[in-house]
Length: 319
Image (cartoon, rainbow, N blue to C red; front, side):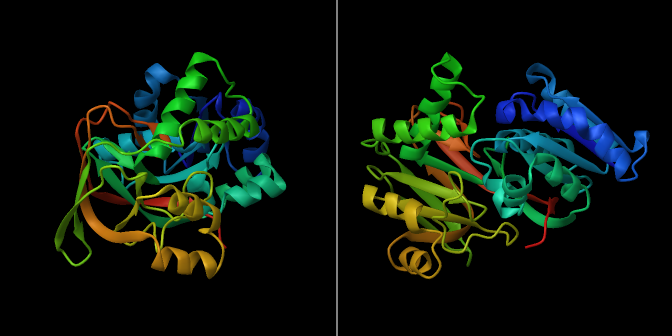
């Protein structure tokens, strides 16, 4: 089978259901036979089994949903041994869509629409993409962090789970993120320490207690398209760690990180970042943590270890 679509039915206000409806017409118009592809909606309690079934039966698995959906696919790939055998595609329907931005998928989606992107993705070429393993269990594709942004992600997800906000509107979700920022703006990391092996193989450590956040990036996009990273690269075998001790630095990194030259100079001279092979972060048991936009608070313990896992092939559109 050439393509297997796993569709999150609630992402993007239910737009996955639109894709499911029009896929037969799209696939037929592009010359694919009925047995060349399959599509099904993900079910929370069966998602791991669904992913394993898809990986075992297709050349390319296309995840239709947010970054969290892709993270679930990649975590299952790593444990199953399919990481180097099956290509991965993404139709972005989440709130942040940071991975879609670096794969050049987000702009065609915004400019031309969802169904146009589906057609483009089916003809896209694969590109190498590093996957990292967190505590030997979870896949890191985009970024990991602890601190104020993780606190915001935690409170946002709590609000959504309680019904305080609806998941059906991407714009409403982003506005609520802004409101959560102002509510959580005084948050700082608890007693924390970072140890890492740099790109030269040397080991370093430092105290992060009281800092605003520490961000570990695999891609040059964070929190819906901001870029606090100096030279993050999705296929260079390194992560980039950004330590943000103060609120002004955090806000400036988010606000101007993408501005040509200005953002580059700011990150070079004012943000402390380093390329690493691996790292270990020690935090309080109740510290707020997030992985690829998903709340991981209380799930990773007091020590978070991140190391290289595999290089996969991700479908990417040309610049």
